[in-house]
Image (cartoon, rainbow, N blue to C red; front, side, top):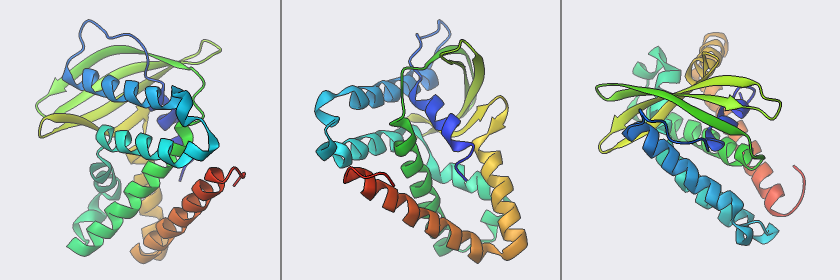
Length: 211
């Protein structure tokens, strides 16, 4: 499940290019949150091994402001979302959000100074797209689009597309395959197993051990 997640989440944390002339609230709010993540990553006081848990908690809190995890999960589950009971939706949303949050925090700690430059921004009602390009160290430019929606007074990311391949579509295809082959219960079982795996990785890292 994390094959596509790494470049997408790495792209999120390296959003450090300048503000374009056409930027509006979606771009400004996204960049503001990313700047806060970078401050945490670059804080010498939080780089000590004993501060791993504190650093990750700070990053995770900011990530929860950037992303609308439940909306991402709802779109990824697609038609199967409508078939779920309120209790099942709550369980799925929690597991899926935890998966993305833990993956996000783990991956962005690999940040090494890559850059993204902003393109234009389009807004259609409560939906927006912020277009950017990832500049790799070799000079390759990779287009990355952030799909956002307005939730109350904030714009939050629910999908990230890298070269037109999105986080939502990637998970949707995986979830569809699992449910069709072995049922919804097996999907939940796999999400729980992944949650335990990531918890183990986090614990090993915080103790200074390789997972």
